Length: 96
Image 1 (tube, helix red, strand yellow):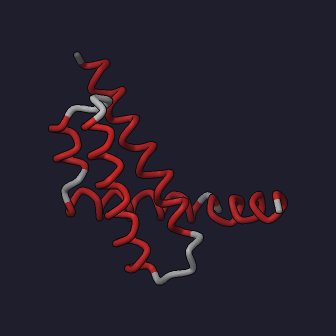
Image 2 (cartoon, rainbow, N blue to C red):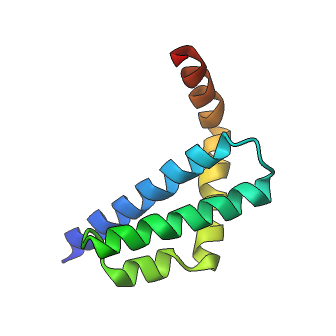
């Protein structure tokens, strides 16, 4: 049971990190990017729940606006501290 919960949380956090990274490159302002990320995360979490890959109670928690704001801010702060977005941008530029 506990293992399933942690596996589901890991899937949810992968969604968060992936969406935040994709949205970061849009060139929009911070608040616009956050709203875009929140919308996309909620959509993907709902899809995971509909496919039975994560429990619906988890999507209810992770899809809460307060939780979304907190986690997105933490992911962006960590990514900025690690130069994650700059490195991703350099990699993508080299792929063109």
